[in-house]
Length: 294
Image (cartoon, rainbow, N blue to C red; front, side, top):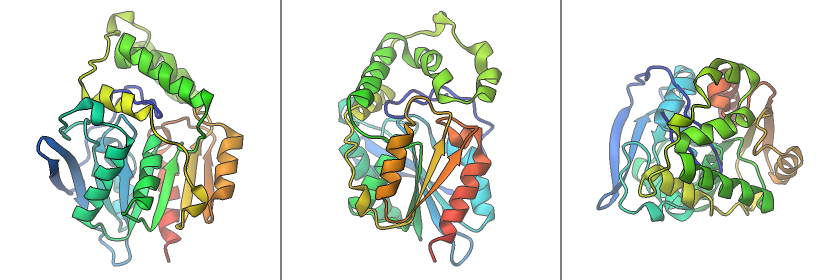
């Protein structure tokens, strides 16, 4: 089960059994007590890309392997998946240090250590922000895909992030699930998962020393002022239109207009978690993006 994350609230979502992609499983030590769990599979075709997946503040490598990973590898591409410090298998020494600068620095360090061939960055929610900042910060990608990432800073976003943190402090991931799932998912997912929701016995305050809470609190301070016009690689902007928390059409349209080489992929029947709700749409969009590398 997943813990919640600000700037990308991901309630606990059941996944399928883990799929073995026969990737190399490694732990990268960043400093004593701090490291990154990652899985790496090289492209099997000469011109294949390596899709590098950036989690939101919740989630894990399993979300990607269980949704889009197999389709991408079947097409000859490789994968680099990792968990942020504070997520499963990635140790940390200070929960208060799990903020955007450290997360981006970790990503750059991972890219330099692994040196993936033809990297294409894929970020879910705030993971897309991390991907763009890693691209700017010394680990350039060949292309970038964002999934329900595009948003603008302001009072509304700050209010959401603060409320998410307060909810976690009060009732943990279960309370976040009950509050936000109807606004983050499409009707079909809600119908399948309604039975297990809204049980107040599950409300347990988040452990403020945990990695999940550290990421939540640190993510609330992320800087969403991005020089979108300077993103110098092809971009695929994937948007689940049923996301009623972060999707604001005029903001998405304005950001896309600033990108020099962007294609929108709107998914009408999915919410925030497009890979879980419509993995086929995400796979198709990523394969199309790889085709734009030349």
